[in-house]
Every structure is written in C-alpha cells, then in structure tokens.
Length: 314
Image: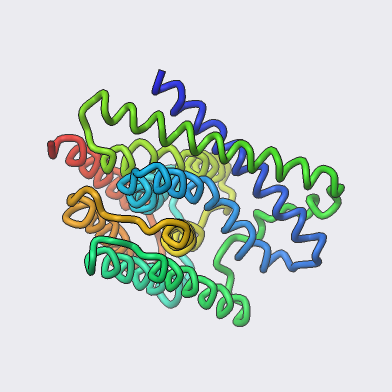
C-alpha cells in the first residue's frame, strides 16, 4: 500500500507542477512581464514547487532527514542522472556563463548550506532567510545584467491568451495536486523506509530525489533525442541553486530543519559538493565547453556507485 501512495504522490506532483507552471506563466503575462523575467523567476519557482512542498511537508511531520536529503539528492540527480543520461543521448554544448556566473554561485550556496548545517546541526529560520535573500539578490543581478539563467524558449507565448477563469482553475488544481501529492509521497516513503529497514535519509536522497527529478529527466531525454536545445547545463545549475535557496530556505523559515541522521553531514552532502565541483574539469577537459557522451556515461556510472554505497552502508 505504501508503494501505491508513493506512486500516486509522484503522479500528483508531476500534474500539480505542470498546472502551476502554466498558470504562473499565464498570470505573469497578464502583468506584462517579459519572457526573460518570467523564465528566470516565475518558471524557476514553479518548477521547484514539488521539492518545496515535499520538504515543507517532511519538516512539519518531523522528518527532517527527508526534508534535507530531498534537496541534496535532487541536486545530485540533476547533475549525475539528468545531465549524464541526456549527454549520453547527445553531446551538450556549454555556455561560457556557466563557469563565469552559474557554477560559482551554485558552489557558494552549496558551501554556505554545508557551513550552516555543520555549525549547529540546524538550519534555522534566520539562516533560511539568508539563503532566500541571497537568491533574490542573485536573480536581481541577473535580470539587471540581462543574463539568461533559464531557457526562455520554454516560456510558451500562447499562455498569454489564456482566460482569467482558466488561470484560477489551473492554480487551484496545481495547488491541490501538490499538497496531496507531497503528503502521500512523504508518508508512503516513511512507511517504505520502516518496512525495508533503511533510514529516512536514504529514502530522501534516493527514492524521493529521483522521483522529483523524473519529469525533468524525461523532458531532457526526449528533447535530446529530437536534437532540440531544450536542455542546458545552466538550467540544471539554476535548478540546484533554487533547490538550496528557495526550497530549503523557505522550509527553514516555516520550520527550522534539524540534522537527525549523521550521515547527511558525514557523507551525503559531500557527494553533492563533489558532483558539483567535478563539472569544471568535465567541461574544460579534454574538449572544452562540451559534455560528451563519454562524460555523460561517467556521470551516470558515478551516480550508480553513489546509489550502491547509499543502500549498502548499513
């Protein structure tokens, strides 16, 4: 029964996320926001909504390990699984803004998160506020300089013609699906963790993290197969920044997140930092500014090792 709740939870998160993105973009057009601003802010926030609801639900239900490792696992999956599999389908070109802006900002947020957690084993409301404020400053600087953090081609201009009634309906459907989906996913995952004898941290960094990355993985692989430029390294890095700053930041503001399982700080977060750091040598060597099929295979293979070690560490 727990597996059924998890599947239903994932399904509702996918549905809710899609409706929320569409309604948010349509609403943004009503306020005459540019496609670039919509892509960099509204779409990014909306696509982080499933992770946000899952983390908040987990924190409120006393599962801090799921709340934190949902983000840590999603960030690992974005780089190793989503980027790796997509590159195996077709090589990915990397924009120079990656190592000039996106990567350094992601590393700063990742290291600051580690410091906050290591300092007192708690991500407090103040620290969550600092992370979220940092995101606002980052987005403001990007918008002011006209830098593209997300692929604005993904913003569908047809949504500008949607009626107000449809926007409200989509918002209601999206919010309801995300609420119930996150609740069922967290409760089902906790039951599975108890029944198979693994920790909630393991479930958070594996099952839940992969589940919240499945929609992005599917879209990326399909786009790569069609040879469409619908996926970029910048998008995934942007997603990782949003996961730390908005998902964990806002969750901590609502309820401080405590480290309840030591392997989060002694193991899991170092995998996240490692996968993030290794992107620099990967894109610069041997062929500059490209994630080749071989590099994609390496990332997926490394992810397989990570998953194996997670489930066998006892």
